[in-house]
Image 1: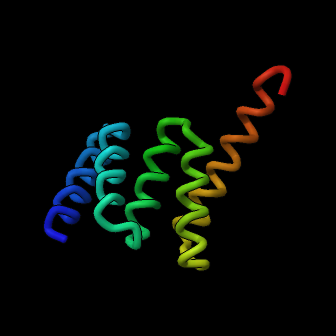
Image 2: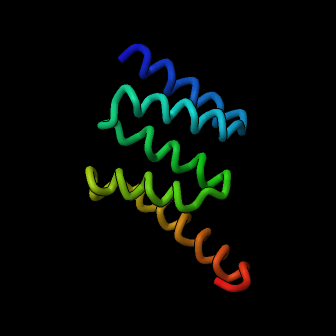
Length: 95
């Protein structure tokens, strides 16, 4: 759990610096150590939203909501992911 906390804190620091790709990688490493911790999924979803990876963000939020069906951050970030996917669909010809 010490390594988990260290990785999560490093991820949080990367978010504060706007380094979302690096932060997402740290949160992914956290998930290898503990798949039960929902905050790393919502944090990684935030990173994916910032990187315009809406499908990935939605997937992380779906994962959290299967475990915690009233997680507000997961609901909110999933809504942002859906919005991003809709905008992308509208702006991409032929879809």
